[in-house]
Length: 260
Image 1: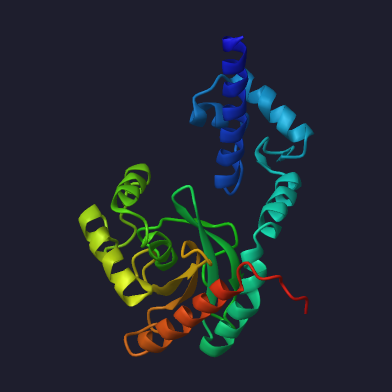
Image 2 (image 1 turned 135 degrees about the vertical axis):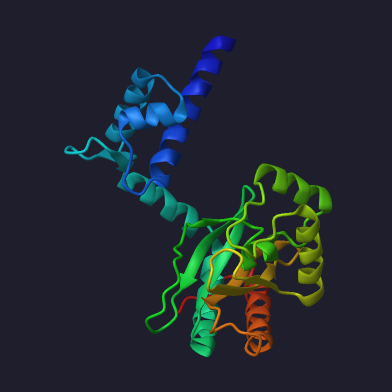
């Protein structure tokens, strides 16, 4: 009995690993690439791939033989996002924020030690940020990430840094735990976080935590733009607007949402 549950557990892990690997690779992956990358027998990979394709979770390109995520995943994702009331509460407030700043606004939540964008409102004009709903971001190098983890305990932050190493994304990235803890102290004092070209060169972000009625951080609101758009002169005004937006989103949580 034990070996049977162990085997089925392995199969589930393998199927999920395959889904994650194909989702991460823009052009998809072939059976042999998947078995090599995940270190599993080609026959096992082949069986799981066929089943996932039959169920609509993967689709196979007949010419290249590469597997990509199928539309079934999209429908699951929609269900997850529709389950987040916070998106409905935040969307009109994010739109107002974009109107007032002409920058791109995001709503992010903490999920398994990473910041995930669950809502986004684009800035008007030609400058577009390389972001999308569902994008997973490092917490140590992003404004929304720092805002999300600032109230965690020291031991929680240490565990998070152990699980997700503080990799250098640009010359400005914080890569030591000591510096990250000091930075998070500043975030708590100011009430907002800044990504000063720490995740992408030439891009800055200012973000604030959204607290639910129980004082827990439920999400973060972020404003992203170029380093020229978010310069030292603009920062105080933008920080005030982001902090106010995050406070208003927090006030909406737990209330019944009005239609229209």
